[in-house]
Length: 159
Image 1: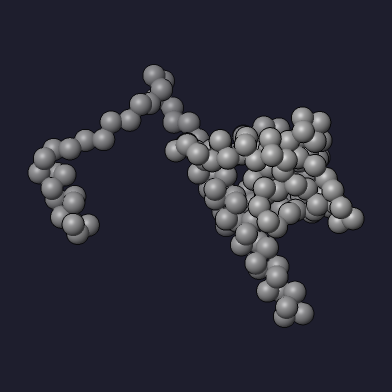
Image 2: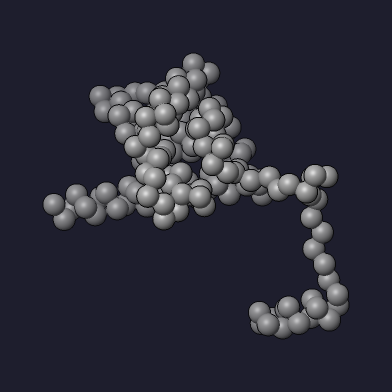
């Protein structure tokens, strides 16, 4: 079925999408107020550390900031550069300490890379499963991290 035909048929049948909205009419989403919260930062760190390419402790604050800049609508194209925020970096290290204490991530090796443990992978995979704003944001953050790594790899080859 073609795109235009779909919408014409939906209009002819008088189809409507029903959405469960809160009683006060607000819509839940990830906004700028949620950025520096420990649970969100912890989930971002777990998301970055569960793949093949592991972030290093020395660069985790910058990486989390860059990924959030690319993901959160309020920061796309902004000149704020939250990756350089001292507040974000401090809270990111607190989130990492929390993850280590709970056995969800470990810092290992001479390069001090961060790796999600099996328990950490279970937590982040469960968060990625649903059709929620958090799942969407985490999958976008995951792609942003891969893009950042690829961009840095290309720059290193050029130099």
